[in-house]
Length: 350
Ligand SMILES: [Zn+2]
Image 1 (cartoon, rainbow, N blue to C red):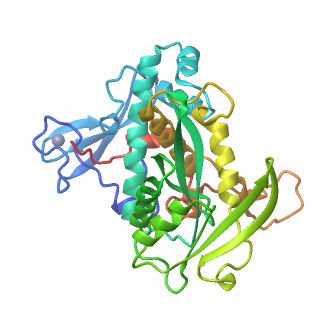
Image 2 (image 1 turned 60 degrees about the horizontal axis):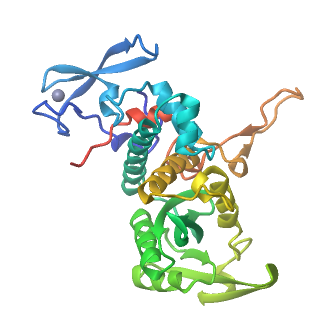
C-alpha cells in the first residue's frame, strides 16, 4: 500500500495485525514490505508484510475489519458505492445477490473503519478551520411519530464535512457535536477568530457558549421567517462579533443547506416523503459514516476545482485540477479509494 497522505505519513504507522502474535499492535515493531500476493478469487494483488519481531508474514487484508467476512474486496467496494447512491440495504442485497444481513454486516464493518479513520486523521492533524456552518436535518426513527435529527458540522472553505450527531433537537445533541468539532480544531488559526453561522435554533448558541470557552469565535444567526412555506424575511442576528467580522459571502447558511441537499440525495434514510426512514439508529450512523468517507476523501467536489494555466490552443487539453474536500483541507494529496480505506493500518481498541 502506498500512502497518499501528505501529513499523515507519520500517523498511519504499520503494526502487526495478527491477534495471536505476541507483538500484536505494538508500535515499536519493525514492519517491512515483503512481496506481493495475488489471490485466485479476485485477482487483485495484495501487499505482503513481514513482522520482524514475531517473525511471520501477513497480508494487508489483516488491517481490514472485513477480513474473513466472506466477500471479496470487489463485493465490498460495490456495496460501498451502492450505499452512497441512496439505495437501501435490501436493494443492495438484491443487486449483489446476497442476503440483506450479510450486507448489513459489511456496512457495519466499513462504517466502523471509516469512523476510526476519520478520527485518526482529524485528531492527529490540526485542521485549518476558519468558517463553520451547522444545521440539522429531520428524519424519523421506527415510525413517523418519532422524529430523529441529524446535526451536521461543515467547514465552508474546504467543503469538509467535519462530523455529525444523531439525536433529539436539543442543546444536548448540539453540545455533543460542538465538542467533537472543538477536538478537531485544537487551537484555532492565529489572529482571526473562528466564524460560525447557524439558523435560529437556540441549541447552537448554548452549545457554543459552553464548549468554546477558551476559543475566540464570532457567531451569526440567520433567522428566516416563513409564512405558508414562503420565505418572507431573512434577519441577521449577530450574537457574537459584528458585521465587520463577516466579510464577503459569509453572512449566510447557504453552503450547509446545499450540503444537506447532497446528503438527502445520497442517504436513503433522509429522503423526504418516502417510507425509507430509519428503523434502527445504528444503521443510520453506519450509512452516514460510509457517506462521510465517500464525500470527504473519495469524491471530487466541483466547486473546489482549480483552473490550470493553459498552454497552446488544443481543444482536448485538461482545464482543471479536481480536488476532494480532504485535499482542500491539506490532508491528502489525491483522492483515496475504497480499497485504501479497507487496508489502512488503524489500531483497533478492544
Ligand atoms: Zn506479528
